[in-house]
Image (cartoon, rainbow, N blue to C red; front, top):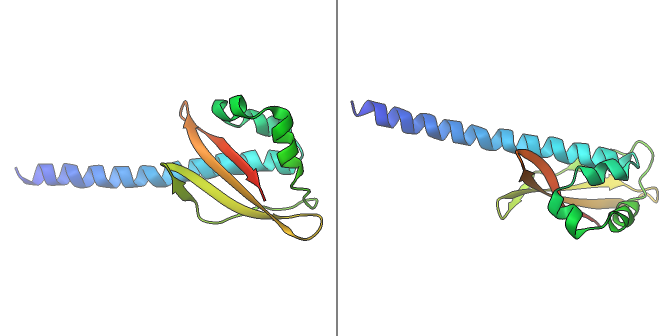
Length: 125
């Protein structure tokens, strides 16, 4: 009967490790969706995809100003690096070509809000 606790522990480890991958994938999908709205110039839709905390801290005018710093080429594609974790939250960093030809660096920190991934921080360099 010692086999059962070992089997249960192994199953739990597999389950939890699998959840992390799905969680990061869901966060990446939410980050992609947010950035697609920004790249299309639909900043109102992007703002609504941000967390409640983000929208409380950041007025739409400030968000719109930050998004305008991108000045991307038409049909620009964002490329993400592998996500990092900061305080248990996935952080995505990526680059997108600007009209000037210089790459813009974008950072998104994600948070889970009522079982959905939302943008907690948006920065453009």
